[in-house]
Image 1 (cartoon, rainbow, N blue to C red):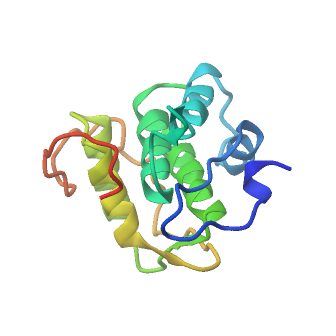
Image 2: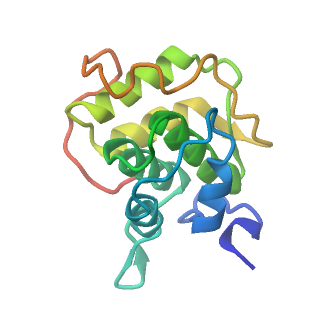
Length: 173
């Protein structure tokens, strides 16, 4: 049984991590079917968000695990195109296997602003997790947001997102 096939954890659980086939399946429907140029990046995302040290998850909670996937897949080139769309699809997959869904009213512009911050100077994972938490609720995933996530995400390094510049950490805050 893969981790994605288990029942959703409680909000106080460390969260479930996705496996490599699940990540690839989540990104399989990206428009234009981009080829993978570097398999090491999605493998790094899988290992990063599922990391365990001293018998404890390094990233505790679904939102922080999803933030680690988004950060890894967005910051490191791994597809011939549409990297931001794939990163967002994989992030939604992590949220979905943890029983969460992205709210219908989350605007594509909000997602793009966060992605610009991540791809630019970067933001702490706890900030990314906080944004994801604000956009999710328990229940069936619809993963909807207006517009594609890829438009301009790799080129604009503006600060239009909600980055607060606070320090790092692994608390799902």
